[in-house]
Picture 1: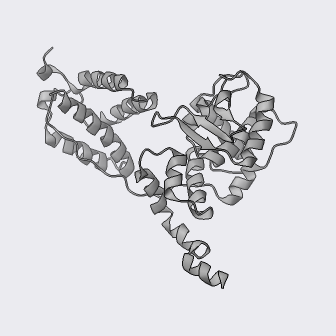
Picture 2 (picture 1 turned 180 degrees about the vertical axis):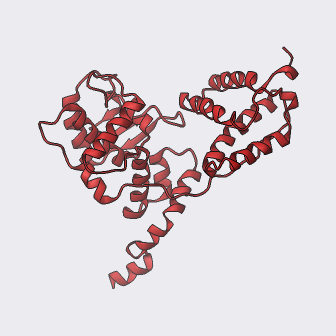
Picture 3 (picture 1 turned 45 degrees about the horizontal axis):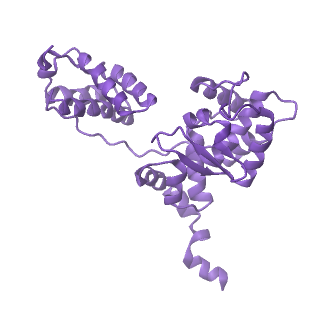
Length: 298
C-alpha cells in the first residue's frame, strides 16, 4: 500500500508500534489509545493522510472548544495528536503540524493536615492485613511523594532499612531513583516487613494473596480506607501534591531537592509546584526570611 493511500486510522497502529519499540512506557501507550478514541470525536480518522490539511487540525481544536471540554483536557488530547503528526512528518507522510496548547495553571488538590492526621492514625492491632497495608502505604506516600505505579512495583529487595533508603526501579522517566526514608518511616516499614515477609523479589505492597496490586485495586483500597477514616478525598495523586506542598511551604524545602525527590527529569514541573504554592510560601516567609532572622537573633 502506498503512503498516499493510508488513512489516519491505518497509520495510528504503526505509530504505536514505533513508540513501543522506542521504549515508551505501557501507561503512555495506553494514554495514546485512550486519547486517540477521544480525538476521533473531533476528527475524521478515516481521512487519507494525503488529504489531511492544516484547516482539519485547526478545526479539531474548534470542535473540542465547542463541546466545552476543559482546557487542560484539550491540551492533553492535542498533545497526543501533535506527537502522532510529528511521527508522520518524520516518516514523510505529511507536513501538517499540530500547534502546542499549553496547560492552564491550576491549584492542585491537597490533603489538609487535619485529614492527614486522620489517615495516619495507626490502626488497631487486630485489624486485617489490607487495613494495615493501606496505612503503611499512606505513610509511604507522605515520606516519598511517589506515583501510584511506583508504589505497586516496589519489591522487598528495593528497601534498604540500614541505609534508610528505597530504590524506585519503575518510574515515569525509566530511570532508577534512590529515595531517602525518614527514621519514622524506617520503623513503620521494619514492622510491616516483619509481617509481610516474602522473598526479595515479592512486591512490598501486595494483595492478601501476596500478589502485585493492580492499579484499580490500589485506588479502590485507598478510597475505602479514606472513607472509613472520615476523609472524603480519595485521590492517590493528591498525596504527591500534598508532599510537594508541605515540602515547599511547611518544611521550607528547595526546588532542586524536590525535583530529585519527585523524579522530575527537568525543573519545569517542579517550577510548576513552586508557582502554584507561591502565596502559601509568602504566608510563612517571616519564618525563613534572612531579614527577619537578623531581628530574631538580635
